[in-house]
Image (cartoon, rainbow, N blue to C red; front, side):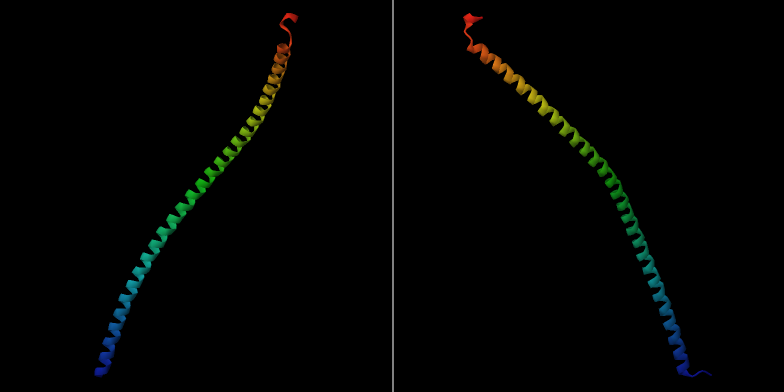
Length: 109
């Protein structure tokens, strides 16, 4: 027959084993929850990265468009400066002619 201490130790070992199984099941459940949250965070970060890549492409297109508009404006201002120079020259000639005419005696014509 088994000694009373042997029965006690067998029950204690059985109880410890049951508690260990409960703890292991709880830990497994906790790890599963952490993994699920990690997957959700990873999916969120991947979606954010995708959005950033799309926006980066759109920004590049906008930058190219702005650069082209800048070049067109620069060329347009150059043309305007040339046109103003032509107008200034014409006005100077008109002024010289009017000054010349104004300086003449009306009876001389």
